[in-house]
Length: 170
Image 1 (tube, rainbow, N blue to C red):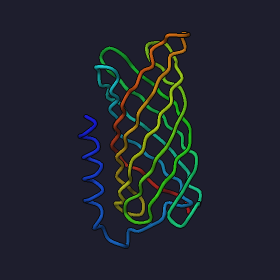
Image 2: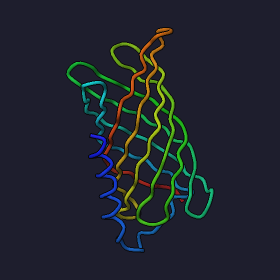
Image 3: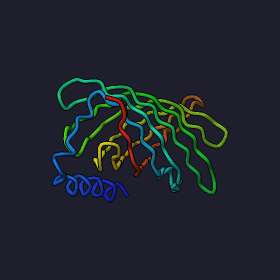
Image 4: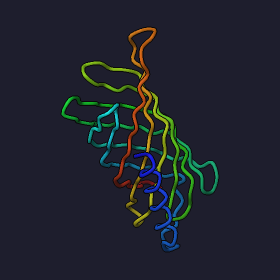
């Protein structure tokens, strides 16, 4: 699954590379809200759900933005439901039709009646369709540390998200 996701992100970047220069627009100073379908691989099960995130980029350079991001996710599987709330920082790079971002988020994941602390590093890319719409592909690694004392197992889940992002603001 990981190989497929990486290949998909590279293919999207290659397809978007010849896009029109008229679409070139810096992400610096703009806010972006994204929604998408998500697949959360937890143990031997894959839960289907959705994610919503909002980020604000502040200028660091001509084509680099850095700022806060908030992320909400909801996933359902026949055996469990997972809800997640995260916040953290994001770095966005790119001035043309493809913007790449990396982020580190911390927060809580609720599953099976229990809330646990989680850390979620990841990244993705936005491919500009027009001034108001991007196609988004994203991959995150979610690391969950249950709070039931010493010897608790750490869980590592993989999240793949595909959807759209909408820049707004100046």
